[in-house]
Amino acid sequence: MYKNSLILRVCMTEKPFVHNSAYANMITNFIFHEDVIPLIKKILHKKGIINVGGPTKTVYSFAKKFNSKIKKIYIKNNNKLMPKNSSMNLSKLNKIIK
Image (cartoon, rainbow, N blue to C red; front, side):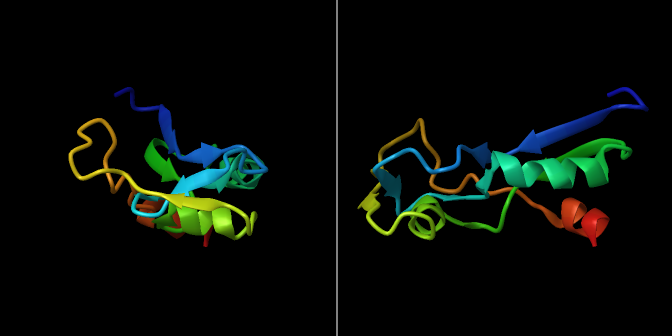
């Protein structure tokens, strides 16, 4: 890694949530595109790797807040391609933006 670089690992999605169903057993840190912009303004001058996302919750919980008609779906236990927990540690981001 270069000394003067900033790497952002961002977990964002479209607004509105475009899908009719959402995983009730997958945990992530979704945040809408428009909510990332103010965060980037606060961290743009930093160096290193910073995870950027919203509070840790299921995809269904995230989507349900904005669409009451969203349906639950589940990742099967034998699905090797999609992890049930893709959440990120946001402690570095939270420390910077406070």
